[in-house]
Length: 135
Image (cartoon, rainbow, N blue to C red; front, side, top):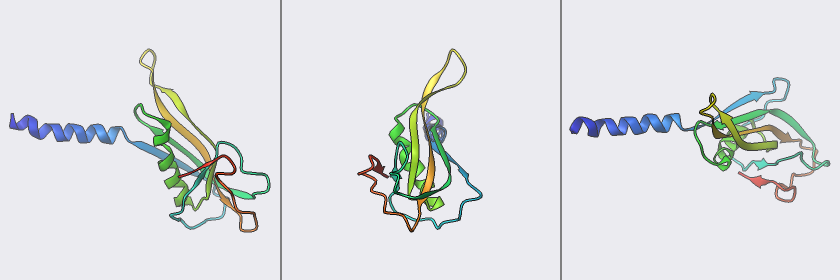
């Protein structure tokens, strides 16, 4: 039985690694490079207000390998945006998508959005006023 007790933590560890959320960043190579930061990132489902000028830094895609809620993706996406120096993720879509072959199709949360930096000569982005949320 002691062999089984040693095996259980290994199995749990493998299961947890396989179930994590991962993000992929497709940086825009023509965009200026910005320093990473630790500030909150604004998450907007649509475009920023028309008076706010932004520059796109890249596209962020995230997925969770197993079932769960889309809210689990948002902190991971925000972390990747901060690494790019972004102030916001715009046109954010987070939804359940089908994965796997038929008939064993299961859904898992998937997110996609564009990381942007607010330009210095632009008015400040009021995230909550624009209908977004901070992460």
